[in-house]
Image (cartoon, rainbow, N blue to C red):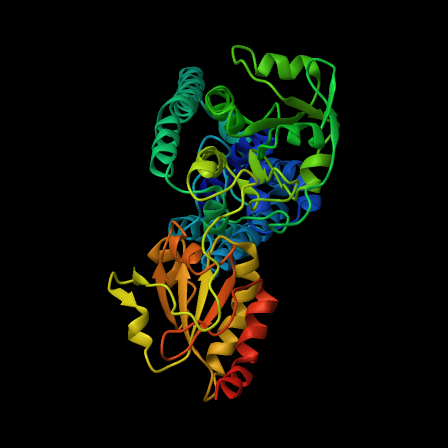
Length: 498
């Protein structure tokens, strides 16, 4: 048992210490990962330092015999907290990036993450259960028993493993920066070139200010020393994309070639502005080799926080009239998608203010055609609901407003009464993520938000009521409270129609 406890302690100590060092090497990525689990920015920022320090402390405690039991207890508590947070996210249909080992290994959470944590929990539990009296072999005594040749061999093996780990990390980082991501960004820009900016904001809302609200004003210094305000950026009567960055943000570096391309090739359609922080010197060093304009310096994160940005890279569209034109999007791919949409918005169903120019449906008009695949791939049409009132709900599992509304929506489904409409959900995302929501209603997939635009929806969650004859009964409403209020008014609508 002493040997087993010793091995478990070494495995846990190595796991916690590697995770801690990797997180300390990428603090911004850690902050973004913490925010993706739903914690506010006011907590995510201090936790990006406190969490790896706690992991480092646990690793050191596990190595020493006199503190190994306390280390095991703390390891069990941390692992239980991590596992609970992951399980809750998966139950809600969300798969945030755990960033468990910084840039060494970062992937969306899933069942494999739960299995790994369960094994580590079992190890920590074994130390707590059996290690109070004797936590196992003493690491220092064990090394003293080694011969000179064994000691040299052990040190050589450790150095070799360290070198291989560093080389693997460098290769992985280069691959991510200059290979797969740039190819995917090019594919995204090409694939989405036919859509408009507001279509994206509805398809992948993450956070930020309500669409249509006034964009917070600001005035910031440029790298040249001059100052520029939001109002000056809008003087050209073009939409503005504000991209929030940080000198220490590695994913932001990946976007710099794309940012240069957007600024140079689409200057006649849109203004791209980079809002970063830090000193002039470190930002000039970061941007060396890239011809970029409109690079602004905030003191800390005051402008980013005013727009609801929890981390970097993130971006938001401001219409030419000074109103918010999209939800705030987070991550390199989402930012690239927003820019690709925005640069084609004027030529694809949007005016220079960034407003969609689709037809506004009127009550009594026939509803637009709807023909979408459900989660099993079967095509669903509105005619399938003929003879019944139907609430068409436009949804996105990644939308935090949808996520907050999900419990109330499930409660309504469980307590439906005679006269309540059928529910048809038109959602973004994958079939797996939507299936995890466990809604009883028919869920169809439309990742381009074409159906939402056809019905006049402006984002998610939003809804419109259709009668049994396929006619529009209500104007589109947006927001959880408005959607639920529309459900409660359906009987009144029925009486009014009769």
